[in-house]
Image 1 (cartoon, rainbow, N blue to C red):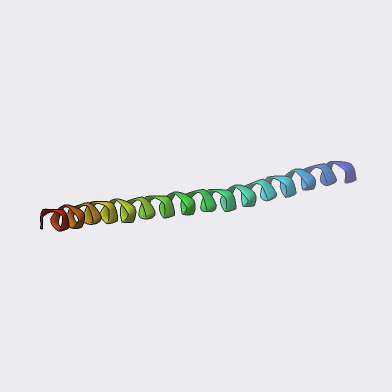
Image 2 (image 1 turned 60 degrees about the vertical axis):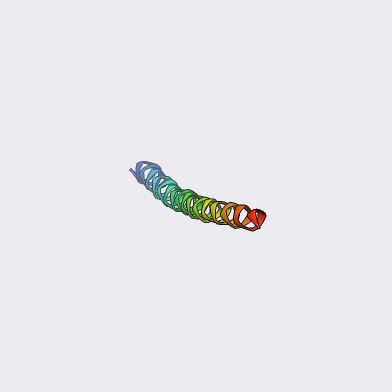
Length: 60
């Protein structure tokens, strides 16, 4: 019975460890995706605004 409890305990500990690692990695992946999305939007707005300024300054 002692061996069975050790095996069950080890399985539970491994399961909790994988759950925690999965939660941390999921959080990191979502964070990186949100940062990339926000940075892409900022760069797109900057490119559009910069293009408009160049075209206005070239007309003079």
